[in-house]
Length: 314
Length: 292
Image (cartoon, helix red, strand yellow):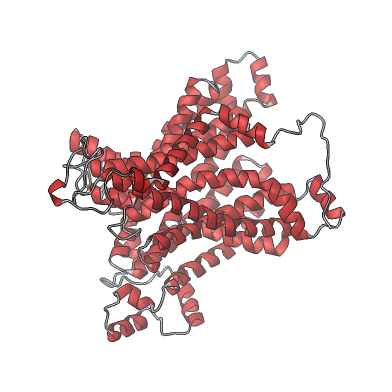
């Protein structure tokens, strides 16, 4: 297992390096002078020159890149052009909100996907399976921003059951915090549940045809016990992978959800950075999110190898 | 000199299992797939016939008709400038479908050759390409597309380019996977023994056999691409106003959700149905080619 972990971490190094090259290059994709993109076409030449110096854009590109890698290695992602605050501290301030939202969304998605996937696999090609499939297709196709507006319209504007936007920190009020998260969590969880339930259904049906399941049946164990105790355990392994690989999509969903529901998380930080033309915050956030996805993928691979020892030796 | 394709009879496997006629028959039996095809066909017709079927010009403003609820004159109501929502949705289908198809076309045009070369040659080429793909897939697609679209400036073409940039690695990875499983097959070995060049083997034998899953994924991805363009437009990085675009219509309407919910609800429904159409059609195609 140790060899596998070391090998997997080693493959991460070139990938992380390429990620750094991409985030470094983003600003250089701008047509013309990047400082004009940030300050606007009407900016004075003095202001443009000052920003060029501030962002180190007057240095040779190779020198800029080495400096950039050095700064990132020390956990420095630059400073905001708006108020000079460290980008890393801005991210860390907003991370708990996004983390809470994402964890609750994953938990809710599993609470929906596990029963739906198991029932569909338990009775394949019946109305239960068809219903689960249709619901999964709808869940995956519904635009999250539209779903958010629908939920706000029904539960906040119409029924007045839930707040339409805003945020109360967990430390201030647990019920208040959770009430504000109900709608955003549903919006984030549904597409994830749709994908997970279909993967679980497919895997479970495949597992249920294996020999050890037939042995369990031959012993006279009830079908439900065979599914839950023998089938589900093995079918859950790929589900771990799917949930892990959905982290990137989840972070994309967070951007929309936090914007609509005014949640002060990382997604809102990204959108605000775009509208404030605060390039260092945008770049730092993109880099941070990419590293989160890389780390999540690493964890998935390690969990997969731990759950299925054949992976380690292949 | 052409390469003779080896005709291998495999006992137990129907030789016409994947013939177009048989595939078409199986697709017609797949209810969800047919529903998806119907929805997609409906949207395509709507986009093509927009000038003939839209009741009003999409940009015509009538301030005296602003915020009118759905009625016999304006089936889906009017927006804050008195523009007919239905007409704007009909015209919006043009940019949405075109951008979805264009994004996937760019993804296929760049990603498939990259995956083909990477999977076929293996070794250092494969290592380098796969590390690039891994790195590209590490970025949350929407976030990277947002950053690229912001840097290039808000426009439909920039949004298309930004989303296509994050679609290319997905097709490269899928194609590579297909090539890896195909390159050790007997028919590839046979072609190699008969002296076919690597390019001929890749294009005529490997790619042809890997085409089916790529087509299925491409169909599924068109819906995702439409959704991504709508997401960027919703966040203000799509085509600038007043061009009719589903994502920006939804964003504009969200400000009037209390008093005129139809302005945002109907464009959202259009996005949902279009994505659902391509998803169910892609699902149907997958069932045809991979009945498991």
